[in-house]
Amino acid sequence: MSHFLLSWIAAVPAFAAPFLLATTGLIINERAGVLNLGAEGIMAVGAVAAIIAMVSGFGALPAIAAACGAALLLTLLFALLVAALRIDQVLAGLVTFALGVGLSGFVGDAYGNKPIAGLAVLAAWLFAWAPPGLARFLDQDFLTYAAFLLAIAIWFAIERTEFGLRLRAVGEDAPAADAAGVGVFGMRLAAVLAGGVLCGIAGAHLALVSSQIWVSGMVAGRGWIAVALVTFSRWHPLRAMAAAILFGAVEALVPWLLSSGMAMPVYLIQMVPYVATIAVFITTGLLHAGESARPRDLGRPFLREERR
Image 1: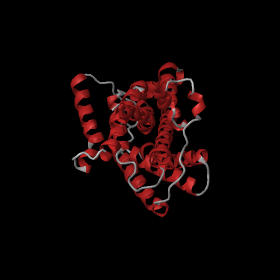
Image 2: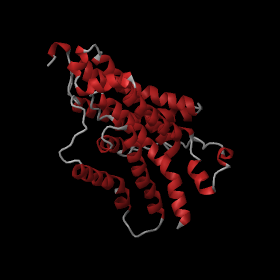
Image 3: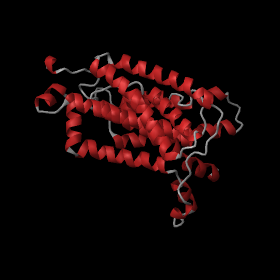
């Protein structure tokens, strides 16, 4: 039992990192007033770009850069739809989702069933000072560490800097922010692109750490769970870290349950993360009934000529 607990706890950070990266990216979007439901598709193109780069003989860093580039291109399309064409953000997000999933499946078909080396964990000697259980927990790849460090850095940037104040102002009251001299369009565009890059890195993590092979549909709803975690964390990056760890712990149970030989249907076991998502929504609704941390201008387009 203790061996299982140690293995489970040690696996949690790697399972939590994609949730944290995508959720943090979406928090940046939504704190600027932009609702992006295309996270699943953006993660998918990031994952396939990382796989293609690795299969083509490039290293881990170029693969992550490729994931960021692919995610950035798809995010630019979303930004064009919502900023220039003023298409409803929900509809634009669904288009981005469908395009990303379809395009990644089409492009990735030629790269299926080609395992890659993936990311290695950090050198063991770095944690020689720690007890064996703690050393096992700390022995993660650099991208997993980067996910948690980025969440802390983004929390600081949003909550403790002038840039973060402007970002929050754009999401809370875009007309007032514009009247105060904040460039609403530029701030929202920067937030959308930054969020898209983080979703792309989340896809790269799934490809280079979790699966280490391309499988169509490998994102498997994690982008939608990230959308839910934004609300669960109440648009706060540090709470998002706790939420990602919670869901990482739930998802880390799935491989163990599948390999345990328990007399349970496979599909029922695979439903566990999604059942947990529903439970989280119910809990959040009960605990915060009548309260809302939602940015007031979330999903609302802004043109200076239409200043309220």
